[in-house]
Amino acid sequence: MAKVTSIQNAEHYTWGDNCHGWFLLKDTGVHIIQEQMPPGTREKQHIHNRSRQFFYVLRGELTLVVGEEILIVQPGEGLEIGPRVAHQARNNSRNDVDFIVISCPPSHDDRTDVD
Image 1 (cartoon, one colour):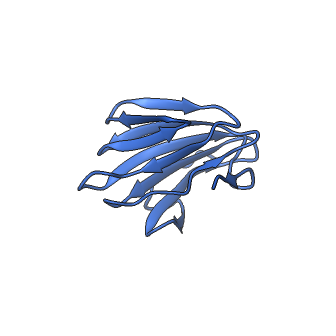
Image 2 (cartoon, rainbow, N blue to C red):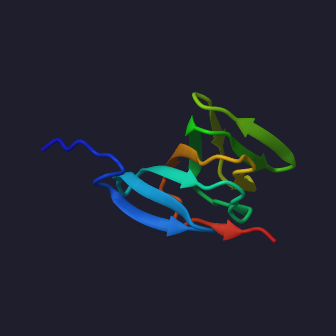
Image 3 (cartoon, rainbow, N blue to C red):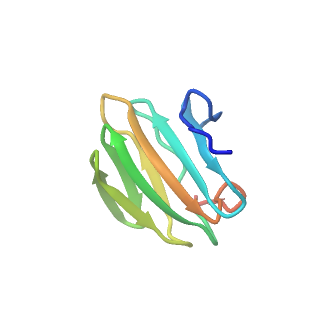
């Protein structure tokens, strides 16, 4: 049976410093997650050994540190990050940032923090 999914009915979790995630699709082969980062928050820099991710910004301004590059991703823009590439999401702005992360295969058990 088909089911319409949104952050109102999706499985929710918190991460980092009061950041939020909602599983819009949680399948063994792919995760599609809507995430929200409050102003001034960031995640730890990390890599995924197998997972390829695509970040797509819905609202706000997402800063992604990819390797040595600092990239600003605006609403309507996206960025792919391949396996074994160090990266970190940051919200350096004064507003919430909402974005979609697609991970194939799922990334939650495929993460190593980088010191």
